[in-house]
Amino acid sequence: MLVPVRCFTCGSLIADKYNIYVKRVRMGEKPANVLDDMGVKRYCCRRMFLSTVETINQLLPYYEVLMRKKEEIESSG
Ligand SMILES: [Zn+2]
Image (cartoon, rainbow, N blue to C red):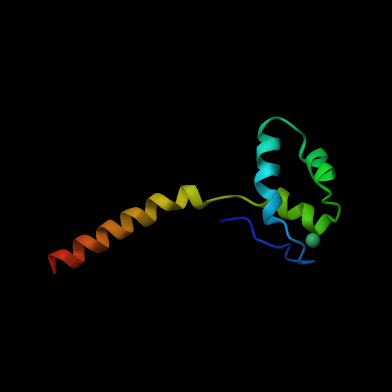
């Protein structure tokens, strides 16, 4: 889903850096170099960046369809 606000293990704030990380990696920089540059040193925090898969944009259309169907059912009954 969305990136967690804090590291699960040490509680360090990571959500504020996630968008910068994603932008720089998409521009072609190596993830390891980006994390070093941003000062993310602990491996517990690094895995948060490396292992997060954002699925919110794939899931949203299903919720929209669900809400439309729910409205249809409520208005017909
Ligand atoms: Zn951590």
